[in-house]
Image (tube, each protein chain N blue to C red):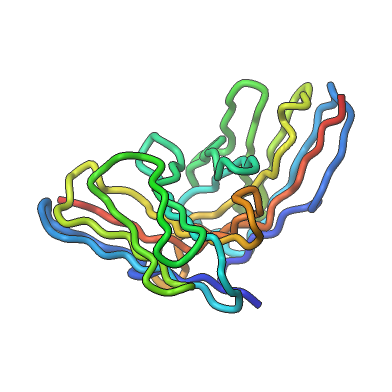
Length: 114
Length: 114
């Protein structure tokens, strides 16, 4: 069966510090991968998605970036965090050729920028 | 370990009907309970969020209830429309750590026929 992992579960970082959140999927090959953010009062927002290694699409311009160095690894990064980056970050995966496939979500990372 | 179950897995109704989607969770120590809508190709949309101290939330034709003691939540959709067709996910947010953060059910796929 497929599983999705995210770490860390919780993170407190100062403004201006770098960020690296990791997501890995097991039990599937060539998944579509997604990063979402849920900020207070804003619901869930799609940040990035990837249909293959090295292929990243950005949905919202911001100071975050994503990378996919391996087939089942998706990393969310920032060089300098802003206060507004605080939120709950979800990674998800889906299989199939299109983005309309059902997405399965990880447990999330709660980020607090102070 | 928190487990979230949604029943039914799929539901087909004629336009205009009122309907109820069910969600149950095994651990009542939740921070909040959320309902999402998933449209093909559009990721997730947050519908309603019920804090653990609340019993219900309403938004337009949607009403979500929460009964922590019984480990249940329901999403009531009034006067259903074809545009309501989507997959509806509920998710329980724990307090982090070994509980995990946001634990999703597998969803109920709703089809509203004109």
